[in-house]
Length: 189
Image (cartoon, rainbow, N blue to C red; front, side, top):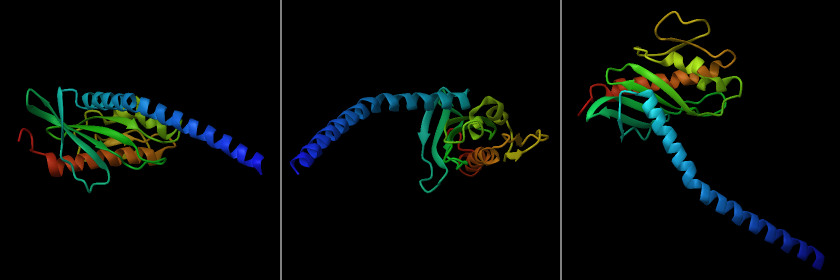
């Protein structure tokens, strides 16, 4: 019995020390990770709305399940567009991405920040071969097609990853719809 108690005490000490070490590592890396994510977000805002030099977060609906954040992009106080961070559900989970829309409603660009899609398939959504298809589209809605696009509003799906392709398009369409209903004409108000 004494041997079991001694082993249990040793195991407890090892577990406690390991927990303290992991807690310390977590605390030490929390700020650098947060800072890196903020830099990545700011880079995505600039990339998806390159005309803007300043970004300001504006109120967005708390009850909306896909729209996570809305930022107004401006130059010298003049609004040039909006960045909407959306999180549509893909095949492997949520896809977090930034959608840039200028003040006239033109889709400028998208940038995928994070995803849990299948490597080699859905993960290709972040590749320029797919994401660049969304650049400079003057449309109200994006449609996914399995063949080469024949219309301005069409984007060719990633082969073998139709669910992911549709999720990205759904995120973009949600952003375009939100802009049309809530931000259109807001400009410099």
